[in-house]
Image (cartoon, rainbow, N blue to C red; front, side, top):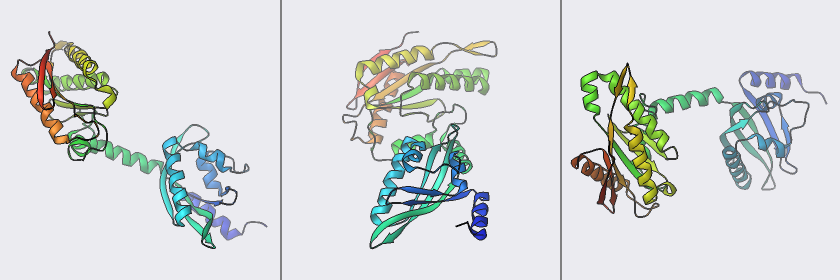
Length: 305
């Protein structure tokens, strides 16, 4: 039977708006797609859509989410809605908004149907706005607001190996003597070296003018190894920074705190311990690090010039 003209018109109009319709028969997982959905996946409409193959085009995280939400919709006979990332056959990554509902017979789900919409541009705009809200404009690191939101203002839900707090030594003198452009060059260099030295960190953030924080996972914060990493970073930080024919120099002081239990800790208490350790480094002459163990600073580690 041929397609009714009004149905064809509806499909074309929906495609113009970025929508495509889909249906899945739960008896055999047979898919029915409009041409717009084939186009979203980069597939030819003449080839039948096989769910076992199509699911492979979703990113791993989106695939797991889709399967979980789909199973819940089928079990509870209720609507579903997710945003999911796919990889088209040409390698392009796109974001689709999938909405669906369930056809129920005899108290059980027999068919899923709904719409797919390409929301990649919307996602990119949202990601850009989120980065602006969460990213430090000068260094590209996470900003104070994100650090506050993800760490200080939340109950611990992720394991924490250690918190490092860094203050730059000599930054004010550079800023006062040579101006803000020179100071900015020092901040960018310190941030880049910090991000490189702790590339496996959960977060590297600029939390103040010349203040930085690093959140490390539990497997990256064992005692001796962590202190060696901190010493290497302080050595790298001390390498002169070229700027407008000059060589700028700054050093760093670091306070380190590790929770007794990586899974159960008070973020503010950990921050206070790291801050106290940092203050102790400054009081002892700066350019070094100190580890706070159970709130009591350990021996001072000096980074010699």
